[in-house]
Amino acid sequence: MEDNLVPNYDFEKHWNNAYQKTPADSLGWYEEDPIPSLQLISECNLPKDALIFNAGVGAATLIELLLNKGYSNIVVNDIAASALTELKNNLTEYKNAEVKFIVDDLTNPSELLKLKNVDVWHDRAVLHFFTTEEQQKAYFDLIKKVIRLKGYVILAEFNLEGAKKCSGLDVFNYNEAMLQERLGTDFKLLKSFNYTYTQPSGGLREYVYTLFQRTV
Image (cartoon, rainbow, N blue to C red; front, side, top):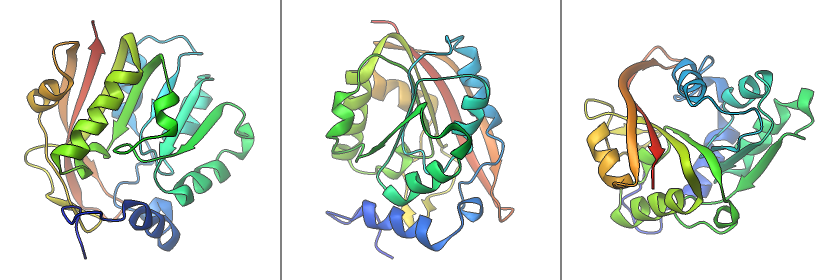
């Protein structure tokens, strides 16, 4: 399979195919109980109407769990419309009234540029698919544009000991120092830890979880 080092690789087609061909709960990144993410969001001590943005959300169970906890201002994004359609179908109890869905490319955004005053940016297993300098710069530029002062950034990516490929694509591995460098001095690292995730297949994936706060 082509990887994401190939110029003009079609990420939209790749991720739409992934969700159309495989049940979400069988995908290699599916997480039935996203405990680390929920813990870090809880530690932000947010009001229930805080704007929580989920980058590259897929069909994550995290959104329903956040709704269950009373959060009422959630924006979700994915490049794959099929992923967001599946997520919508899983949220029928809420009739999607409390969730805004945005199909857009994090590395070449259009609709996402309209976001502002985001209280929490949450990314689990998205950033590490952006392997070029251009992609990475666009991603972090978007964070810096939309996060409010005192807002939080949660990044959970494959760590330096983690997998080098996922879903047939090359990945870019991180530690907390590398993420800090990318965010720059306007963001303060509040917490970081390594975490071993167990895939639906039983395989293991090594992640680094980080929580930053914008201070300037």
